[in-house]
Length: 464
Ligand SMILES: Cc1ncc(COP(=O)(O)O)c(C=O)c1O
Image (cartoon, rainbow, N blue to C red):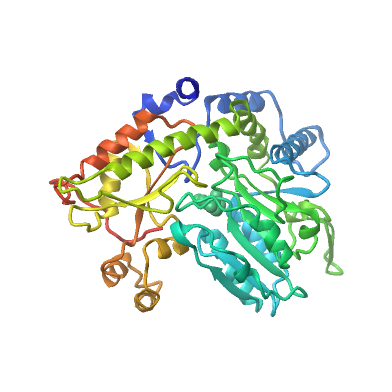
């Protein structure tokens, strides 16, 4: 029943995929915009005259009103109590995280605890923490790259200091969904909590009355494709009040004196919105949220889960002629608390790894967009690929920014993968997309992993 609904949706809103022969399987990288959003945005732009929102003239006020509407709509979408949460518009999820990093009251004796499975934009917070003398600790993943028992890692934080715990609601590497009740547990142990919801919210409802993270970061293009360049930091007002911005900018202050070198910053989230907002982008956010609401995020979730279940079953059933499995999946092989992101490597008949670049090449040749590398999530990769600590350390030691070459690293790590393939399904995916992917994967059956004659692989220079 729903399959028919999603087929109709694909024809109505995403017909460009089939018209241009694309199989899009990188929804964790970016969502796709619907034609309805493009139309709504074109209508809004063609029917308005919008000026810089920092003034009081009519076109400025019109832009301000659109931004304020978007703020209310975002709070409403995430069911956030406006008395408790503020919306800070940012460039993207990374921009939201950086605001926290540069303004959190890190201090000696305080702690920054984060799961090893985190995007680099969360890992990067450790640089701020370390620079201010806070301790940085990682929580290693448990079996199937899931969150292990957390209490022992949270324990021992000095409650008189500032402590921050950061984890993803859903892994952008393995698709694992993290339990949101970890937020309350971390609070009990004296931590503020950063919830990286970037990979979760495109296919799941985040209800901020059902859980109470202090900070949440999101990129809207991941949820509904357009606009790019707009994200949000959803912050609890009391937590936001503990942040100290290291600078001010146009838009963040109420008053600045050049003579006396004093400034008074805004007391609301506006203190975190540097310069002129991306007001045309922000004005396009409500149409994206409307689009998700019209279909229903629960229905989108069910659609993505059905496709992921089929994908996992098909991949796990792939065998070489000698019976050897063709696919090694990193993370859960069942549907239990996982989303629609699947990371894997192909294996040859002897169990050796097929170079992920070769899979990417054949997929690209077939018009399939997927992702390879370690997806800006080195912690999950290190555990998924089972790097022995000492080997990885020895190999990393050989590298400097000038000489960094993943080929050297790969050779040094001999039997361990240095990258994987990631496919992720979304709102416009269908079974035909999966069938096209399976054709490519099946082309690696038996004959090993030699590149077809004439295939030039890209140099293994960077992988992320
Ligand atoms: C889980 C997660 N967090 C953060 C980010 C960073 O998002 P952006 O590049 O939009 O800032 C990503 C992007 O892939 C992600 O998947």
